[in-house]
Image (cartoon, rainbow over all chains, first blue to last red):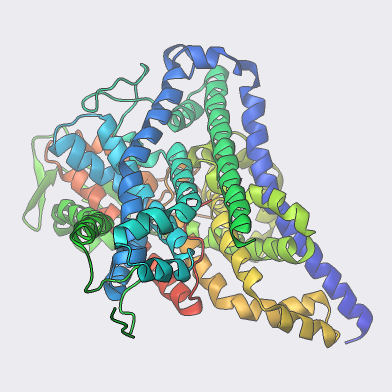
Length: 282
Length: 347
C-alpha cells in the first residue's frame, strides 16, 4: 500500500477515535447543561429550607443523606469484614466461591432487589414503607462493591509485611489491625465512596421500599416513608408543568453536586495514599 | 522455633495451626459476614422462584410465546382457570414483547457502545497528553455516576425530541434498504432513543475496563511495531487490539448485563408499549425491568394475588438472563487476567 494511503488511513482512524472520545465527553456535559438550564430559575437557598410539598428539596436531600448514612452503618462494616475474610483468612477454594457469589450479587438487576425487598420486608413482615427496608435493599446492591474494594486494597499490601509480622510472632488479629489495615484504609475508603455514589443515584430499589414523603425523615425505621432526590427527578419529569420540571432538574443538580463531591473525595483519598506510599518507600 | 515450608493453601494471612483463640473467634465472625452476600443472592433467587411459581404454572409456555400481558378483569367475580390455577377473568401473562424489548434494546446499545468505548479509550490513552488524561477520565466517572433518572429526564425533555427531529428523519431514508429503519419516527420516545441512552450509560463500564487493559499492553511490543515502521493505526490494529480482545469481550458482556437490568431511564423513555412487538426501530416498546416498576402498583390490587406472581415470573426471566451474561463475562475475565479489573458501575 502506498505510504500516502497508509498515512490517510491512520489519520482517518484517529479522527474516528477522537470523535468517539467526544461522544463520551459530550453526553456528560449535555446532561449537566440541560439540568442546569432547567433548574436555573429555582436554584437557591429556598430549595434547602422548604420541602417538596412547596417545591423545595429539603426533605429529599435529608432523606438521601439518611439513606447514605444507613449504608455506611450497615453495608460498610459487613462489606469490609467480608473483604478482610476473602483477602486474609479464607482458604483459597472457599474464598473463590464466596467471591463468585458476591460478584454475582453485583449483577442482579436493582429492580429485582427492590421487588423482593418490597414483598418480604414491606408486605410479609408488615414494615410498610420503611426506611430500614430501603437501607437493606440499597445495602444488598452496594455490598459487593465494598467487599471487592476491601479485598483488592488488602491484596495490594506487600506480602513481606505479613511475613515480617509472622516472624515477630504477632497474632493474626494484631497483624491485621496494626500492620495490614493502615495501608489498606485508602482503598477501603474509596470503596465506600463508590457505594455512596451508587446509593445517591439509585431509584428502582427504593420506589416500593421507602415510598416517598413530603415530610422530613424521622428516626422511625418502620412504617414511615422517606423522601429522596432521585424520586423527585423521576416523578416531576413526568408531571406536566414547567415549574415541576424545574424542581426535577434542581434535584438532578443536587445529585450531580453530591456526586462531584464524592468523586473529588475519592481522588483526594487516592492521592494522599500515593503520597504516603511514596514516603514509606523513600 | 519451627520452620516449615509448605504449599500455601490459603490466601493472605493463612489459616494455620498456630492461631490464637482470638484469631479463631475473629476468623469465624469474618466468615459469617463473608457468607452474607452469598446468602443474600440465594435468598433473592429463592424468593423470586417462590413468588413466580403460580404464574409460571398458569401461563406455561405462553409466557415465552404470547404477546398479551394483562392482569384480567380485577373487578369480575368470575375467574379464569388454567393448569389448575385461578386468576382474574381474562388474565394472560405473555411476556414475549418484554423479553424481545429487553434483549433488543440492550443489544442495540451494546452495538453502539463498544466501538465508541474502544475508540475513545485508544484516543485517550495513546494520543491525549498524559497530564490531560485525569481530567478527561472524570467524564467517565461522571457518566458512571449520573443517576438513571437524570438520563431519563434528559432523554424525554431534550435528547429524544432532538433525535426525532434531526437524526431519525435522515435514518428513515435508509428504510428503502433496511425495512426496520422505515418511519414513522415518532416523537423520540422508543426503542432507538432508549438504546442510545443505554449505550451512554454502559460506555463507562466498557471504557473503564478497556482503559486498564490498554495500559497493560507491553510497551516493548508496541516499540517493535513502531521500529518496523508501522503507523500508530497499524500498531493499534496489530498489537494493542489483539492483545486486549478477550478483555474487551468480557467488558462488553458485563456492560450488556447492566443494560439488560437498567430500569428507570428505560421506563421514562421507552414509550411503554404493551401487548405488541415494536413495529420499527423508533417504535415504543417496554422491557422487563421497566414493566415491573410500571405495573407493580396496579398488580397489588389483584385480589387473587396472581398479578404480583406474574411480575415475579417476568422478573425471574430477567434474573436468569442477567445472571447468565454476568457469569459468562466473569468467566472470560478470569481467563484473560489474573489481576483485578474494575467491575460494574464503579467509579
